[in-house]
Length: 99
Image 1 (cartoon, one colour):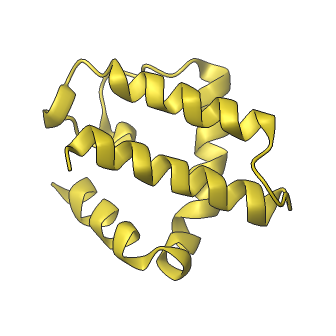
Image 2 (tube, helix red, strand yellow; image 1 turned 90 degrees about the horizontal axis):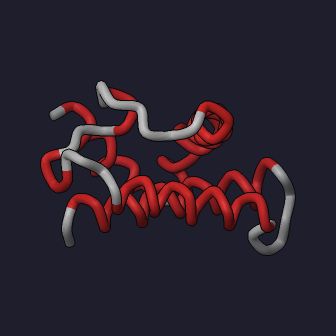
C-alpha cells in the first residue's frame, strides 16, 4: 500500500473514531464526511507525494485554517484512542512519523 493511501486510511479511521466517540453519532455525520473528503483531496494533491512526512511536520500547510483547526481537534481526541481501537495502525503511524 502506498504512503498516501495509508495516510488516507489512517485519517479516515481517526475521523470516524472522533465522530462516533466524541460526537456520539451512530453513523458518520455530514461534517465528518466532508472532513474525510477534504483530507483525501489534500493528500491527493500533496506536492511531496510518496516522500511526504507527516502533515504535522510538513513545512507547507495545505489545509485551510478552519479545516486545520478541525483536523487538529480530531487528532487530539483520536490519537491516543487509536492505540485501543486500531493499535497496529496507530503504531505504524507513530513509527512513520519518527522517520
